[in-house]
Length: 97
Image (tube, rainbow, N blue to C red):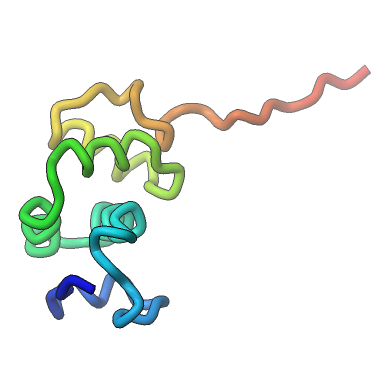
């Protein structure tokens, strides 16, 4: 387990901190910090993970809100079209007879 700073732990409220490995559970940690974190925790995230890894998780995540996705698309300079969290839902209404 890699050490998670106290100011980041509050964003992982529902898991056992001693069970989290920041490398093995990168997707979970990155999603949580992007969605709920503050500027301090974002700084830790950027120091802990490669930018490419953060961006890749941002692109694939369905757990990040569209509002958060929009912000980080601008922050990291990527197209909003690449984010699953911003795309329309995959399900469609069924036509009635």
